[in-house]
Image (cartoon, rainbow, N blue to C red; front, top):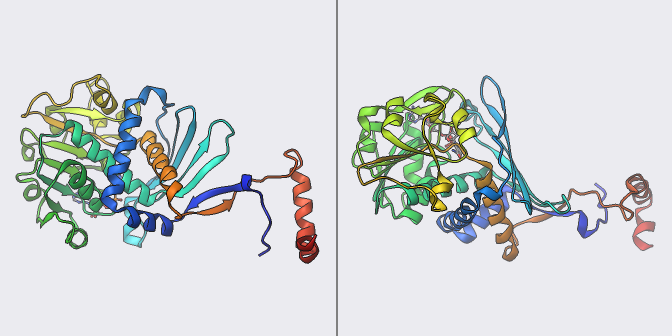
Length: 361
Ligand SMILES: NC(=O)c1ccc[n+]([C@@H]2O[C@H](COP(=O)([O-])OP(=O)(O)OC[C@H]3O[C@@H](n4cnc5c(N)ncnc54)[C@H](O)[C@@H]3O)[C@@H](O)[C@H]2O)c1
């Protein structure tokens, strides 16, 4: 392959999966999640200043491919993400993603990155933030239902940000629970593998459901959920894909990210279109009440919204200021004369035909 000399303007920092893993190891998973919580909190406080649109979803029989754009007028971000619950049977992940941050002023990208790992971090950060604002005081025990790719991040985020000490695991596939328990063995959390969702939620202050199944599932039934708990229901995130029995929703104070998207994708798709919900940013900005009292059930019906990915992209951009965990890709064409794109290609022919002459010129 011929290496072309390109200008700085053509170069965009790119974070591969390898570099993302190393960056996360440099910082520490729990610390990275805590740092992203800070970015989320700031962005939730200034929520009205963002462009907001429900994500653009291409549904198929087996899954969904989504584009999630937003902008605060200075930076623009988007994520490409899929959700294919059957994938793990074929050795593929349910959720993969990549994304980009760009300057609104020039339209030039400033960061291109893998976002499969970054999504797990930001989703854990979002659950932690929601739990901190909505959950009971000093929660100690988390029930983690669904022990797949997201699970360890969720548990570690709640440990770091909310002080969770014990995690009780359940998955319909015992191999997933064994994997999760082994990964969390040296985390400082007390890990209890459970035989049923009912056993897992016994004594839990916080319940996180993060299962993948393309149907109206009932991971929790009404009789299982007692007063005072906080639920992060984050696995039901598509039309026709929910996790909670409708009656739990009717007993809960419901908090969402962006109502127009959650009405279609969240567990609240089971409710009337005018059922009252509160957007989480309103609580964080001090414009709405959090939980009513210690006996209330608070439900964060999380589906994942573009502003969360924007916050995570900004966190990554800033982290790279002091980290070498990226490479520069020449993904922007940069002719010497901005209008001479065609001439740039012709000059490349010269380089291809006479590389030594061009190099010594
Ligand atoms: N809200 C968000 O922002 C957000 C972000 C990322 C992923 N998700 C969603 O979270 C879900 C999980 O994602 P993942 O990457 O961990 O997927 P995954 O496929 O790696 O894991 C899902 C786990 O759920 C288990 N499961 C399925 N049905 C179950 C049931 N009835 N009871 C208990 N366990 C059950 C599976 O056995 C599997 O281990 C997906 O639906 C995904 O779309 C949401």
